[in-house]
Image (cartoon, rainbow, N blue to C red; front, side):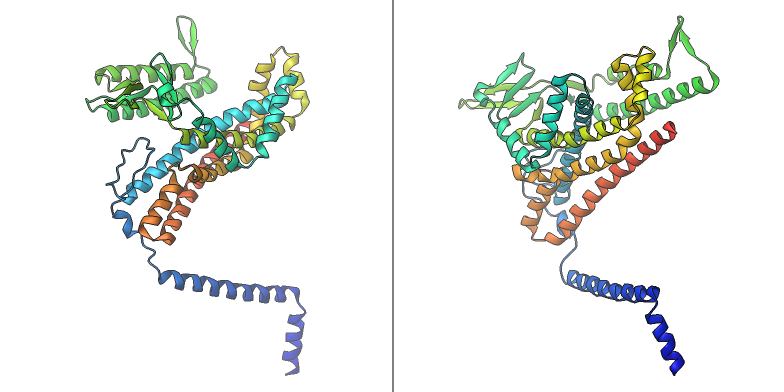
Length: 398
């Protein structure tokens, strides 16, 4: 008996044993909490069967998809996802370009450029994103009324209802989707051919020449792409045509606008806010990554006769990419999640459409779970793409 007590006493004095006891008790509490949540969830209707019902509400902004209120809630939700993806793709591209330019300008010896970049970062980075979204919406709503709209040679119409731009629309011959498919195949074929020719030149030194002019893989790829695109465009009898915006009055004297691509105030406000806000963080990432490089890199490039532009594009930025991409991924994820703030200005992206579905159906929990899964999927896709790019950059720079 005493030996058992002695062993228990020795175990109680062991730090490893105490840690195991604490972890075991913690797991019990976690298990009980999870069991409680699951039992409560099973008492609720957490299915998505109501999504097959008629949506019953309109969506003011649609892109690619042709949505009506008679469509199902699934299609309404898909329309919101498409709007979110469009906003994120355009926002990521513009924020990257803006952040890179401002990051380089921050290090410029030109006092004007460096001051503008400094003020841009310090003002917008320290202003709440929600305030910026509302500010840009107010700016767009201050544009001229539609009766006083600004037009540029019947190609662009600017008013407080939005900005109308020329847009490529499919013709009635029905070959639009087929031509888009051919374009995608041409892009893939051009990239593969360009990669093969460049690899062949690097390994075997074989160069393709035309009239004593060297043709790189990139140039040949572009030639192949434009050739396929042009020939297929005329063979399919011009499947796409330019849809120009127009402004007119109806019988009652009301001004209306039609045609073209509509850049609405709501989309413009959320896009400008996301780009300007996220661009400040990308600016600091680019600036810090460039400053982390040895100054000898710049001095050596200038010593061999490279210009400042060549030094930055050929020497500095390619090396800085290795430290730019990891934090840049976080900013892309933040931009994607911050797009849910569009709900404050009634832009029908993923979250606002989902909230409308919740109000109409009365099933909040399954809809919130679907929102969670969707944002998680978008974030994982961005992370996977950026990780692939990071591995490639790291391998090349090694």
